[in-house]
Length: 315
Image (cartoon, rainbow, N blue to C red; front, side, top):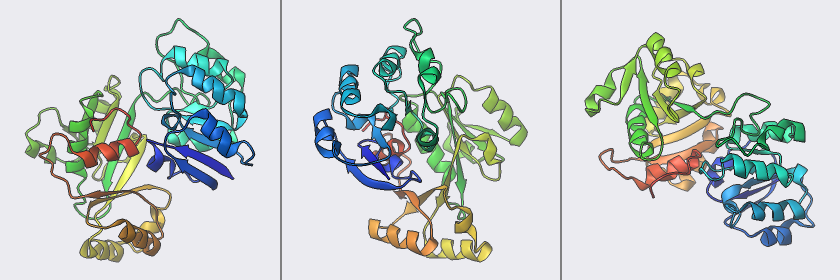
C-alpha cells in the first residue's frame, strides 16, 4: 500500500491506478511528514512537490532525504523553471533522491522500476542550463517537453472545439501553445487566425513541425488518437445525450475504463458525479460546468488546467 502527499496536484494524483493506504492534502514541513509517517508502514510515498513547504530550496529536500528512505520516495515535480533547472535536479540526485518526474503517468512505472544512480548520473552536470531528460521517462523515452493533448467528444457535441479554444486562450499567457482541429473547420467561427485546421495527413505534418510548442491542443473529431501523448474524453451528462450514447454503444463505458473522462457542460453536483460513476462503472477525472467562452480569465478553466498538471496559470 502507498501514501500520497498532495497539494496543487491533488486531483491529478487521485487518478493514479494504485492502492493507497493514506492520503494527506495541504502544505507541510518536513517535520510534519516525519511526525505523521516515521512509524508508518508503506510501500511508496508519492509526493506532490508543492506540498512541501519551501520546496524551492533544495536544502529542504536534503532534509527529506535524511529523514526518509529515498528508495520509497517518488516526487511529482511542478513545471516551474527553478525546479526543472539542471542545478536543482543535480542537487536532487546529490542528496539521493533519484525518482522524480513531471508526468503523473510515469509514476506507476517508477514504482515498479525505480531509478538507480546510473540512470540519473547524467544530471550531475552543472554546465547545462536545462536538463536533457526527466526522471521516470529516462528509461521510457526522452523528456516529453511537449504535451499533445487530444479532446474527443463521446456524447454528441460535448464541446471539444470550444473547450480547446478556451484552454488555448488561458495557456498562451504562460506557454507556447498550438490549437489544431482535425477534419473540421469549426475553428473559423472564433475569428482567431492562430487556430489551425487540417485533415489527418496535414495534421501529422503540422504536429511534427511544431517542435517549438510546449503544448498542442487537438480537437480530434474522428481523427486518430495515436498522434497525442494523452487524450481527454468529453461527456455531456444530460439525460438525452447519455441515453442516445448508450443506445448507440451500450459498452461505451467499458471501453472508457481507465481513460481520462471529463464531464463538460455539466450541471451535476459532486454527489451527482458519484452517482454517475456508480451507474456507469467509470471514474470521472473532472467535472466542468457550462463556461462563458468570452471571458479572458475563467477561474474554472484555470482550476482544470492545474488538475491537468499545468502550474503556470492565472488565478
